[in-house]
Amino acid sequence: MKRAFSILVLLVIAIEPCLANYEIGSENKTFNYRDNPYGDILICEAAYQDYDLAGLIERIPRILTQLTTKLEFSSNLINPPIKLYHSPKPDSFTSYNGQVFISDGLLHRVDSEDELAFVLAHELAHLYLNHNHVEIQQKSSNYQLQVEQEADKMALEIINRSGFHTISGLLLLERLSGQSRYLNDSNPTLTPRIEELRLTLIELSQTTNSLNL
Image 1 (cartoon, rainbow, N blue to C red):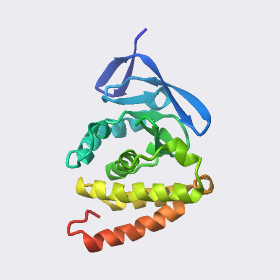
Image 2 (image 1 turned 90 degrees about the vertical axis):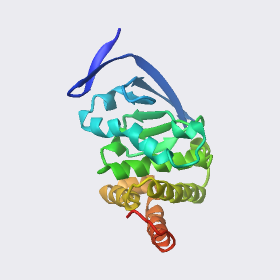
Image 3 (image 1 turned 135 degrees about the vertical axis):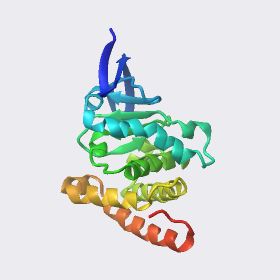
Image 4 (image 1 turned 180 degrees about the vertical axis):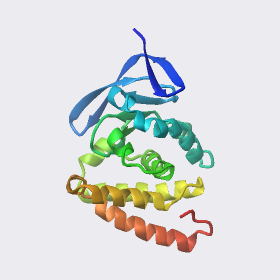
């Protein structure tokens, strides 16, 4: 039976439930998702009813288009399936089959469209570089840091060429690092990623004629 949910004041749409499965390490998880009016984005019910996120969710397709329009990405990277899931932990990752997962906990900590662009560009970079999330989690922390820094660097290049502010990624990671000791303990790559982002921004400012800070 179809039910109607309102995301924006003037937007009411009929939707049906669907299921999405993904793997984290050896653990299988299943979330209940609902179709939505934003194209290839699936939103779990808890995140869907979070009206504070409606504005950000609405911008995702346009930001993806802006990120990929001038880049020579293959067609599967131009419109990757986006799935928003409910979790207080700020996190995003790509699955082995090219899907991008973003937690509503992360979206709640995003302060601008430019920061959201960095999150999406970072995941696009993982897809482009063929980083497999499940395999990454099974590797050493040094390897995990390496692939995250590779994705960060490419994300900076993507958002700079797309007209977004490159400093947005650094601002977001610094905010995440300062908000909770738990985030730093559970994500040991966060602090060195911040340090490397600072160095990359300096490098880009010296080698790029038009850097959007």
